[in-house]
Amino acid sequence: MSDDAEINKAVTGMPKSTEPEAPAQLGNERVSLPEPAVVTQHVHHSSPWRWPVTFMVLGLIGLVAYWITISQTVSIFKGGRNKVSEVSEQVGKALDTFSSAHISQSFLTQLPSRISAGGNQLEVASFESTESFRSESSKRIAWDYLDLGTTVAEVRVPVTYRYHVQLEDTWKLDVKDSICVVTAPRIRPTQPPAIHTHRIEKFSSRGWLRFDSQDALDELMRIITPTVRMYAGDDQHVALIKDTARKSIARFVQKWLLDNNYWSTNMVNTIIVSFPDEITEDNLLLENPDE
Image: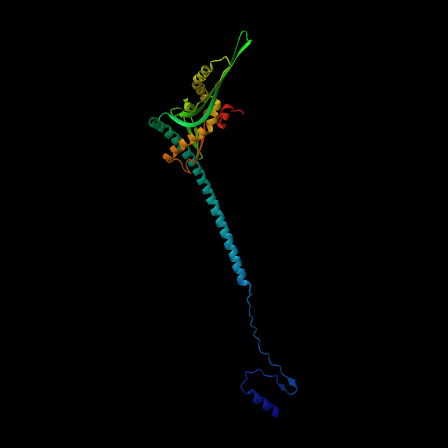
């Protein structure tokens, strides 16, 4: 056996090394040994935007769900609120109607007690005026050839005119939207007017052959009372005191409302007074329905 064979036998009998063996060459031949297996491990790297995007998507989903829930709740609330408003409005109208009728009836019921306690007349206005009365007369004789002169007489006197309404006359009260509309009885003059005779002023003059100046003054004094009585009731004098009378009646009604706990912000807080001879918008509508 050659030396190379012995060497090969000796190598073959040795334990195998764990290190990869280099290709052995025997003589001129090259022996290829198998290459060791290479194990490849894949490492997954997570994206830095993954969790923010996840939270954003979840937030959008929650927001949409919340919006849908709120929309349905608001719709239900609006529907319920409209129903409540309708019911409240109907109840309010019924209460207004009841309050108006109740207030009007209570006022009319209590008027007789006011009449028995303070009389039937409610004074609503007064004013003072100085009235002048004058007469002038001329006289001629001898077929008007001889002039006896002219007699002039004049009287000036202060007069106080007073006006009232009768409590037993027709009253009407209507309450709506916290406004009390009062239709009061017609205004009447309190007769006779007060003539202040202690402040009277007299003046007279006469012609050269006239001796009747005192008679002229006496005649004026006799007509003062019936004349001022007539003045008190004419439209001109009544027009002077109508606004004052309106305020007096409003105060009278307001006091009654206060005494009966009807005067407040929620019940009655405004009073409008009119008289039967005044044409209001309601009267116009009744008188001219086609216009």
